[in-house]
Length: 422
Length: 144
Ligand SMILES: [Zn+2]
Image (cartoon, rainbow over all chains, first blue to last red; front, side, top):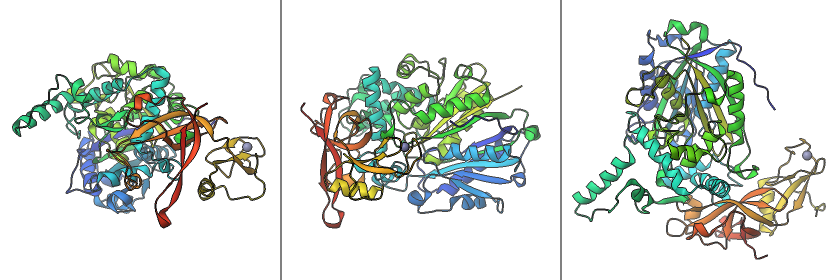
């Protein structure tokens, strides 16, 4: 078992940025990263001369297949005018973003650099859906898992059936996660789906009436979510509204050595826990209702930070599917095994609940541009911890928060813990 | 039952060759006894390299499953999709190891009727024509 060692020196975030997430036919990942970078430079309270940046780590899953463009890191670096500093692309499927962040943390903690740019980018909507499905499937164990007909929604659906059998959850319980994350995303101007499921349903009814078609007789969002046409099955028990969308987007963070943070801002956010773990393919695990790599990375990050789950005010977790958020809420220690779906039903994880999860809308509503997601999670925490989240600001103080970013079915998991000090 | 006559490399290609011969083969560590499925060339428990091919019992139970409606391209080419969903699952063999496989003999249109723990036995599916012809691992329901 690897030991949890402290960083050799502190690392702080002094700026964050992101592009809007969505489908942008006229923009490639480079264009989106330029938007995220400009947003980041504008967020540095005391101003930023980009010439101080010494190295760049980019999270990107598959520009090769999505855009037919490899060697992405130096291209994105050049687009923001920062050659000749080192540029390194990091690929860990959907955990590429947080893995890139971790490279930046280690680069500063080692003493090699003082100022590091971390980015994430993915351009997914150029391909037809079947090709996106095939591209995402390359994150699995292709010869042994994909040959069995599994898709990514299918893997998480299999976890859901195991979870249902073990803990008595029904597919309906998962809808609470989707409803909550769309409620949050409706308050996020950068979200792909900036609308509640209620508004979505009303829009569908209005559009049917406008076209002279019979209006659907949904009396509530529960009718809507149970309608096989409005919310079709993707991989039973998961339906369309259980799945994060196909998204274009980019995100950026600026990390500095803690002793230099006050040159840039009076309210830096410090990274006090950073951990990463790996695992086998899903079928090799003893139990399908938890991600061992997520539990291990969480406990190591808590150990490094010297805190426990009860100290953490909010979390951004990897809700690529609704069941993934339920399992994540247990793996990070917010709730006991088998209690996560009840916490979602009871409103505990809502923005105004006791343990808010995915106040950004999560991958579900904000969107999931794979390589950008792990970095964009930090964007949300930065806003919440500095009381700058606007309409979606959680009540009270947020001195401690965490991110949980998963690659594939948990073959990679990266956890970071953040602190704001006065 | 340990095969000692032919030592094939512990690769996906060898695993698939065995499937085409109607055998679900795992690798057993000769040093510590750990059974690995899919097969591996280095033991994940003791890190030893003395692996031997072992035919599994082919009997097990369903540990998790899904009914796939949005299919990958190679399954669409076999006629599957929204109008013809199929079941994929994770099967726990009686030996304790698990593997991903297609699940046959269950009603894909009635997922509520498919139970975790359902007893299964190994079967094989041949799909594709000519050069693309390949054997896929499947499990079918088993009457005790
Ligand atoms: Zn061994």
